Structures are given as C-alpha cells and as structure tokens.
Image 1 (cartoon, rainbow, N blue to C red):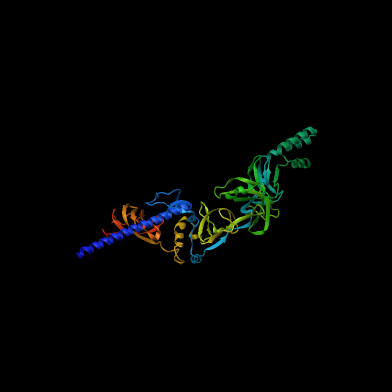
Image 2: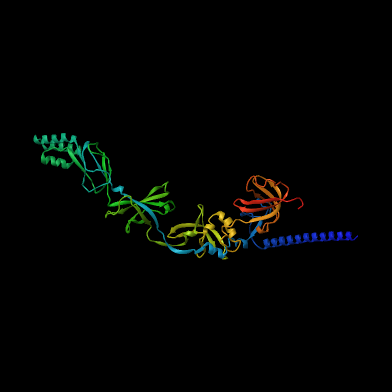
Length: 491
C-alpha cells in the first residue's frame, strides 16, 4: 500500500513539474512576443533580415527564404549602431591610426609627363628640281647638325649643258636681245638657278654642277640619298629640323582628359636641372586615346634658344598654373580602392568603425580629394585597414575583433567551434540538414538549416531520421561541420 502511495506521489510530482515547465515556457514566449510587438509598434522598423544572411534586406516580415525561420526586424535605433566596436587595447596593438577629414587649399593644376620632339611645323626639306646625279654628298648620316647655308650635296646635271651652250652661241653671233631673252627664259624653265645664269654671262663658261644647301640651322632628321645616286625632279634628298623651338608632347591620364583644353598654361622642368623652367601654352589636344597607356596627348611649343633641350627628353609638366581652391581631403593611405569603389573606414561618435563608400577626386601630395561621402571633421582610419580591405574581412575578421579583450593572437586565432544537437533531415554529398536545438553562443534559436561537409565522403555513418550531436565552425561558404556523432536511441 505504501508502495502504491509513493508511486502515485511521484507521478503527481512529475505532472506538476511538467505543467509548470509548459506554463513557464508559454509565459516566457508570450512575454517575449508581446515585448517584440510592443517594440515594433512603438519604434520604426528599418527592414527585416535573416540573421544568417544579414546583408539581404526585406521590406516586410515573413519566413526566411534561406532556412526554416522567421525574418527578424531591425529597428531604427539598432540601425544607427551599425559598425564594429574594437577594443582600445587591440587598436593600439594593431597600430590603428585616425585622421580627420579637412578642407585645405589644393592646387587646381595637375602634373603630367611629357617628351620633347622636333617641331615638325618648322622642318625644311632639301629637294632636287632636276634630273641629275649625286656628285658629292657632304652630309654623312641622319641626326648630323648643320648650320644655315651648309652644303648638303653637289649635283651633276648633264641636261644643263645644251641650253647654256646655245645661249653662249647666240651671244657670240650678235643676235638681238629678243633671242637672248628667250634663251634665258628657257634656262629658267629648266630650273637653272639665276646665280648660274649670271655667272654664265660673266665668265662665258657653262656650268653643270649645283650645290644644294641647308635652308636653316638644325639637325638632318632624314637623309635619303648616297654618293653617285641618281635623283629625279621633286625628290627629297634630306630633311632639316630646327632646335631653337621644340614640341613638348604631354601624356594626360584618361581620367583627366576632360580637364585639358587648348590654351592652358604649362610649366615644365627636366630631371637634369629642375631649376630650369620651360613655359608655354597648349597648342592643340590630339584626338584619340592610346590603347596601351590609356592617355590623351597634347602638345605645345617651348623655346629652346639656348639649346639646353634635345628631342626625346622626359619632362615633368604642370598644367593649369598656380591657382588654388578649397577641397575636402583625407590622407591617401586612408582610402581603400577595390576596383569598383573607394571606401574609407569612419569612426562613429560611439567609437564604432563603419565602412563608407566615397567618391574621390585628384591626388595632391599625400592627400586625396573626397568629392562625396564624407563631411569635414569626420575621423577615418589612416592605418590598419588591412583588417577591413575586403568584403571577406568585413564579414569574418571584424566580428572576431569585437568578441573580447585585446590580445595579440586575436587576429590570427582559429574560428571558434559551436556544438548542438539535432535531428538529421537530409544527407547529400555536399551538406547535412539538421533540425537542431538553440545555439546560445551565436544567438540562434531552434531552426532547420543545412551545414556543409568538409568532403563528399565525410560522416558516412550519418543517416536520415536519427538524432546526432554535432559541431561546426564558420567558413567562407557558410558553416561547415567538424564533428557528427549519432546518439543512441532513447538517450
């Protein structure tokens, strides 16, 4: 009888405990739900998201398309606290420095690189007007310097002999001036120079040689004949380019192409003597962008009377003069360029770090101009951005930085492992789907989701429908299983 009373007492106690647990659970859930509803009713919801996929935002509540759970609201006060909080000790260990966005007077001009070239607009050519032969070539090779009037080549012209002898015969025969004038005109038509005709009248001897001279001082840039070669009327024997004026052809980066206009002032120096300045104005902007260097070319004429420059010199040129304008700048090292956008890490009022996309302008010394995205006085990270210079860093490194106190090993520590228990819903070669218990360390409630397998052959003994204790860690592709231990039935 006592045994029956004891058994009845145990059953009653168990029932009371069970009912108490259920009531308590219901009361807690009801309280949490009512609190959430009250908060949603009293505060503005920015968006809904899945905690497992925080970057995906939704404009209304509902079930997550990624896993078996409801979307969670993000309220206005929570959205304002975005960013990452880094322990001050860890900031010191990592050498993180801050700089302030500020307005400074920046030169509106910009520097480019240019190369000196011959001024083709002032080049002269030495041509033959008759058929003849090179009797003597005074110029030896291209790039030879010549002075004005210096001989280039001596031509033997056999066709000049007959008209000169005819003129001398008419003179000796006492012919009237009409015939003599006609003979002189014939010699001019045959391109016999006036000096040769005058010498013919003075000496009475025919000439069959003519010397071609340099029309101006400079350099022979082309030499197209050799000794003994036959030349034809209109053939170019040589080309002479002057050195007193040179072209400076500047290469402007494609990003600055729209800022270059004809007439802009240019101040250029070369490495051999930076104290020597050569000035001028852009004569013309050449059409077309170079496919190799992605630059636009413009050219100007520069004075070289002292002959300090020669073609082919590399020069630094500043375009636009010395005017300045106020610009918002940050240190260039604070800007992270990903290829698609430029980012700076801004320090918020509560000490959190928040990546901000900015539009950058020109570089000036060690600063970069910020056109949009920042305001004057905001603090940005000037060093230590290697922790946050990619999307992977923003998702994996920064969450670990806010997890605990400063430590030299935080940045290199292995990702933490989490454990829970769940029922196996599905098994594939890529992952295992569990209906698992809550994971307090991650703030997860009970849910159904898939965990990746380290390999297709991992955990071969796991079967659908059984209960297992498993461990997992965060990876680049989500969450990966590290251990799966099936539990005995009823345990």
